[in-house]
Length: 170
Image 1: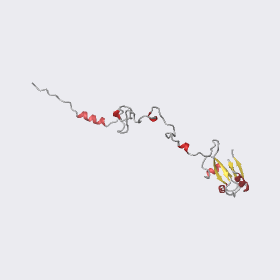
Image 2 (image 1 turned 180 degrees about the horizontal axis):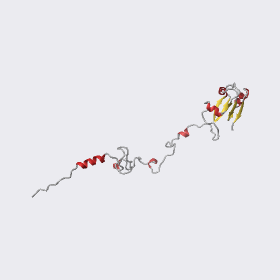
Image 3 (image 1 turned 180 degrees about the vertical axis):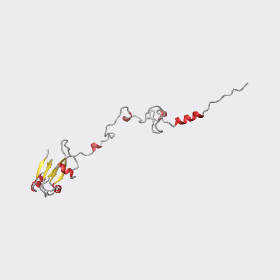
Image 4 (image 1 turned 135 degrees about the vertical axis):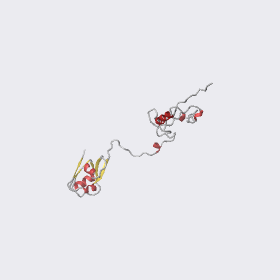
């Protein structure tokens, strides 16, 4: 009997093609880096999963029940911190806050100048957009016209005593 000779196809060209396509990125070959995606822990899926039976919630009690959620500030029945701390004073919801400036700080301006909140902001005396109140600490040497949202009684006296005037802004 004559032996049948089987010829195998050459794989030289095929390996070259594989190498070229192996390094190329296509939509089919895109994958996230190894270790960047972690599987979600599925609790309550049998004893082999380490989280079967009670699903990591322990035995019995309020915290093991379905739908349990603790309210904010709850401390296990102990008196919560926000109730233990003493409360003092009152804060009016309608109160206004002022940026305050003393009369002695106005000596920087030359005599006859009209001082406004915008001018005070430009000179760095006031840093916010709040209303401005002039207080009567110190002495005023220059005759000024002062515009502000509020004045203390002593500030009004000292401005008029220096020969200046004041105007309350709305």
